[in-house]
Amino acid sequence: MPVYIVLLGAPGAGKGTQAAAICEHLDLPHISSGNIFRENINNRTDLGKTAKSFLDSGDLAPDNITIAMIRERLSREDCSRGAVLDGFPRTPTQALALDEILSEFQGKVDVVPFIEVEENLLIARLTGRWTCRAKGHIFHEINNPPQEPGICDFDGSELFQREDDEAETVAKRIRVYLEQTKPLIDFFDDKGLLKVIEGSQPIRQVTAELLSILPKVS
Ligand code: ADP
Ligand code: AMP
Image (cartoon, rainbow, N blue to C red):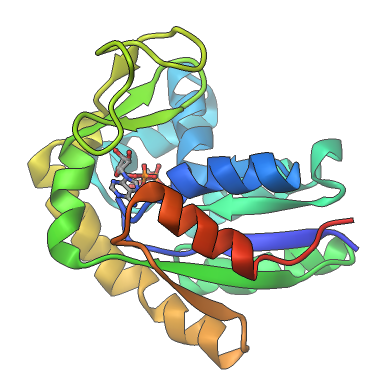
C-alpha cells in the first residue's frame, strides 16, 4: 500500500525544509504544490498563466486547477510507493478531493504532521528565506545560511528571494492561511490523523521529532 504524508503548517513553518529531509529518509517524492505552480509560471504554461496573479498577490489559486494539477502529479509512476505532500491540501474542498484521488490509487492519507510555529517567528523566516533557482532547495540567511551567500550548497545554482516573501505579501499569506487552511487542523484531527510537531525548535530537532512519528514505507 502506498504511504501518503500531508505536511500541515503556516507559510514559513518549515514544510519544504522538512519535506526534503523526510523524502530523503523514506525515499518518497516531495510534492510541493507551490513548486509546481512556480515551475509552470517559469515555463509560461497555460496553468502558469492562470496561477500567476494568485501567487503574486498571496491568494490561493482556485481549487479546481490546483486539484487537477495534484491529481496529475500523484498519478505518475514515481508516486507508486506514496508521496510527501507539502502545501496541499490548503482548503477543505482540496482535502475532500485528496481523499477521492488517493482512493483511486488504493491509498489514503496516513498521517498529518502539523508543524506548529509561533506566529511571530513566521515573518522573519519568510523574509529571510533564500530559494534555489534550479531545484527549490531552501536556505535562511540567519537560521540556515548557505556556505557561500547566493549559491545553493547542493547544486551550485543561484539563490533568489521569492517575490511573495516580501513583507506585505507575507502578511497576506499568513491571513489567508488563518482563514482558509487552519480549519484543516480540526478536519484531520477529527479523523485521528493529526500529529503536532513543535516547529519552533532548530531544524534538526524538528526533523528528529518528525522521523519518530512517521510510518514505515515498504
Ligand atoms: P514552508 O515550506 O512551510 O513555507 P520553509 O521550509 O520554506 O517553510 O521554511 C521557511 C524559512 O524558515 C526558510 O528560510 C527555512 O530555512 C527556515 N526554517 C525552516 N525551519 C526552520 C526552523 N526549524 N528553525 C529556523 N528556521 C527554519
Ligand atoms: P508555497 O510555495 O506553498 O508557499 O505556495 C506559494 C503559493 O502558491 C501560495 O501562496 C498560493 O498562491 C499557491 N498555492 C500553493 N499551494 C496551493 C494550494 N494547495 N491551493 C491554492 N494555492 C496554492
